[in-house]
Image (tube, rainbow, N blue to C red; front, side):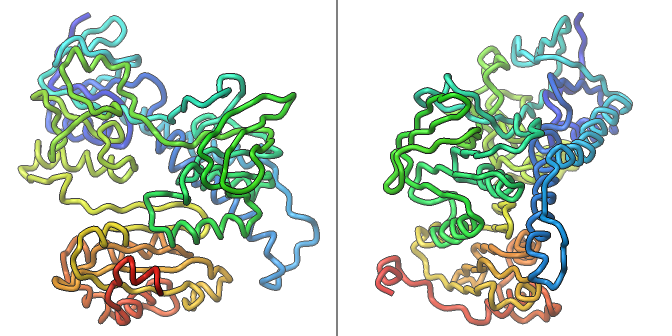
Length: 467
């Protein structure tokens, strides 16, 4: 059955549904294709369900520390993991159902269920339907990488997606991968009561971060009884009865770890391998990401790629911003660009890491004079009052322009406090806008002006090592 549309949107992550509503609202006839669950990663296996689980883990952690606050709990703190999952499902399901309901009720919008396949640059097949359109928007997201490791095909393993179905407590969870997903799940399940080991191939956790951040995160994990194994350069798997033996040739520690369950958290890949992009002539890079320009256009006129599949961010907020960029250019005569946005994200361990702009390592590579400020969370009154003094904050400033280059806040409230810095960065204002501001006491944000009032020249790498 052939049908023509003004626009076809493939996928219903954080970009597609919002764009469908905007296009349909101005009278365009829109087709939306979804092959599985509406809402994409964030709604189904990412932000909403995982942060709900993080909240349950945090509640258990605080309850165990109740005596520190003078609170008596007469019985040992336990976890009903089935109730934990039920709470997660109760919060996640309405969000997923809401996306589908809104799309199906949107005037000028038809919803198709099934796998989309390009037949040509502007013809999409989905089941028995052939949809043609001068505008096609790809929003297919990504999924966990399943690495080629010896023996992996002989054991059962979990990914961030299948973890959403877990309603039991692993006795010993071995997490392969020491970055955002692995760290969040590792700490979460340790707080639920599992023994946890994290294996990381690199010399430090979360390799994209500065080493001082990574070391501090490692300390946070280890303080909760999580075993962190670095330099695990040769990882293999072996089934041994009901257990899984993970071979890990690390620089220190036993050459193998025996656990009950394995979580693979070694990265993400785009869901682009089954779209038939070659038939459309849409260019991809060597990792499968769709190559786009500053306006999110592919090399094929009339075809755009948004969200995780274009490799321009990999976060819910970058995907939503992709929608804003496309809509602004197509509908609002507002030439917004990907290059306008500043890197910003968070790591939702406890305490969280809030990040904006460049890392210290990246600033050093610029080779320009810069200044740095740093404050430990033990010097933040709000953190002391809450007995959550782990971590630190630091900020980098261009010595010539006085503009903020980047910041990291690893500590209680860091994921929220970082935005006061991010907004000033977008304004391209000098750091003195914050350093001279009067912030509310007692908060985490009040130490940001203090930190900026004590900037020092950023030493060269060699000087830092000597110091």
